[in-house]
Length: 246
Image 1 (cartoon, rainbow, N blue to C red):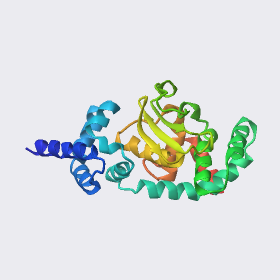
Image 2: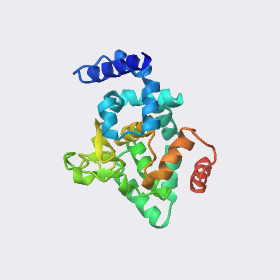
Image 3: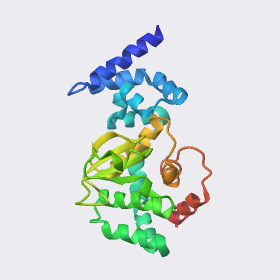
Image 4: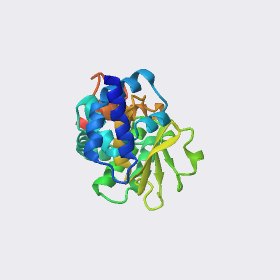
């Protein structure tokens, strides 16, 4: 009987999500109720992302990603992510300016592209620079195109961020999407830092692995910025953490 009730609650969420103006309180209530069912599916069955989009469409909305992250780890993702990013940003930018060699050249290019000292632009700079300084390969993660229908650009991307309309600002395009398993699952996010934050939450909500090409960047966000998981850090993450504390 319990399973039947949960399935009914899931269907309510699906029907509500299809409306032009869903009842946010009702969706949250039913998503709270069905959390255990959803976690069991995600962790045990590991369904394909397109199947999750069909079964749990509300989970692919920004507000529900934040709620789900709170259900999973008991933290306010948005508040903690941006609070920590802003706290580290001045030290990160200073470190970017000091770097020499090829890493220094790549970071100098990012610094030149940064249009202003507005918080969003500085956040973009930090999130673009982190993988460079940690030795990740952001080219397999940040994808750019003018038309999201041009699936050739990202169809082979397991986890990534799609930057659209980036002519005005390459580091901070005006329209950003999230790629999972070669499909854009969330579109129209207003800036790159917001997309990165939501993607981090989706990875937790869907019990996904971090993208291999950005492993150290995501571990830095998890372990240093959000203080989640085991405290033992990989050497390059520990080095960066020490440098930021100087």
